[in-house]
Length: 202
Image (cartoon, rainbow, N blue to C red; front, side, top):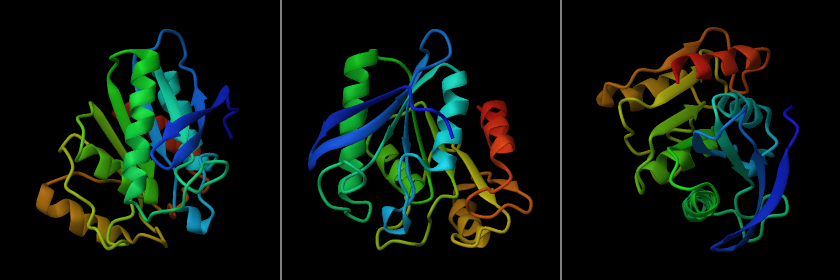
């Protein structure tokens, strides 16, 4: 797990949002906001997939913000099944831009966090979007279409979000999906390769 370089509380619409900030290697070249998996299954900003993405992106020069969304950890408010969490991410983006300036913005998320990141991308412009094990077909609100340069990474043997569901979502968009052979939902044993693939495809 990546050691947190800084922790802060960001004002959000439902109260303070506990956020890990990972500084970039060298000069900052972008901002990344990385969303965690479903807190109802224990997902937080210290999740290994989230932290793997933060490490990979920080090495590419991104200042990475990993918030605990509403109702998670020390963040205030109540879990809102992907609705209010969009506003949480928008608050983190606004804070990051106030601190870092008008750098390129990347949105990223794992599982539930990917669903949230895709919904945020439907609201605001972002230069990059990274979805890992994205939770399509799991919530009352459908996962929106995404830009065709979105990096979608999924495990062949994902036991939580079947690969077939992601392909059914991606197919009408003509959206490529990068499949990890033999990988489950949490990319156990594949995290180093996941970081390498994020950097290679970025």
